Structures are given as structure tokens and as C-alpha cells.
Image: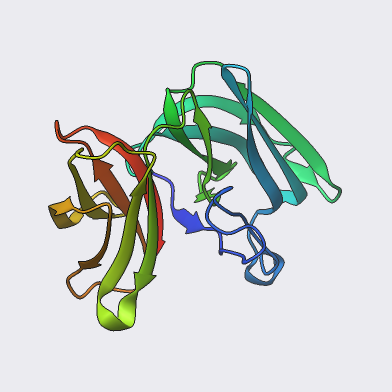
Length: 210
């Protein structure tokens, strides 16, 4: 039977990954797990994921998921929960085969009943830093300030914008090194801005809160 999904609320203390992470009203809305921290740290050629819960109720397991674009996810591993706990419980998982470049991680916490919830997303980079994208949203003007840095003069780039369910909401558009990108009317939410090189490869992905 397919589980029913819950989404953890976002918190300004941690936000959307290391990129940023999470929060305080969990108990008020009766979530099965109160997640108090989630971090990703590069350790050599591996990623060390660490998280902690304050309480757990009917928790079956955590599924660790990884992505290189924050849209398409694969399972990296699985860790059992404490099932029932009213004290701080620490977890750790090591991803021994991260991708070169930017890696995104999230937890899929599954109840004994099959109900599941996703954590906020954290990120870590492996290998050379290379080209990076900086994005600042201006929803009132339907624009986003975008800047490419770590690039050589004469290189050509494109950016596209995607919703978190993978839909392309703005097609690949030629990009100057610094410019204001005009966007269509977008619903409030979180989007992924992809930076493409001249061969069409995605070389960086940045979150945009609209």
C-alpha cells in the first residue's frame, strides 16, 4: 500500500539544506518525529550525514536519498529508527560514493503505519569547486538576479528554472555573467535554478525561494 506523505515545516534557523534546516512547531502538528538537526559534511571522498531527533513515535526507519539536481532522487541507504523515544537520539550515515560536484541529501522518515515525511534538504560539494551560480529572487518584479562566477571570459551559459516536482517552468535561456532574468508569473514556493554549459550539461543548481 502506498504511504501517505507528510512534509516537515521549514525553519529559518536551518532552512532548505545546509543550504539551511528545520524547526519548532513539529509537536504542535503531531508529526511522528521531531527532527532537530540535519547536516552533511565532506570527509575525504565521502559524505558524513548526521541528524538528531528529540522525540519519535511509531518510527520505522529513515531512508537516505541523494540527488545532483534537487529534483531527481536516488536511495543511498536506510537506517532504522528508535520506534519510540522521548530523548535526544543521534544518527549518522556515511555515503561512500557521492557524485563529483554538488550533492543534495534528504531523509524520508517512514512510520510503522507506512506514513512518510521528508526532511529539509542539505548539500555538500565534492571535487573542484568550478563554476558556481548565484541567484537572488525579486518576485514583485518577476525577475531574478543571476551571476555566474568561477568562469573564464568567453564561455557561454544558459539557465533554466524547475519546480520541485521536476517540471520546467522556464526553458534554458542564454545568460550573461551578470544579469536580471525575466521570469513568468510563478506561484509562491521553492524552485531549482539550473546552470547549463554550452554542451547542455548541468554544472550547478541553486535554490530560489519565490
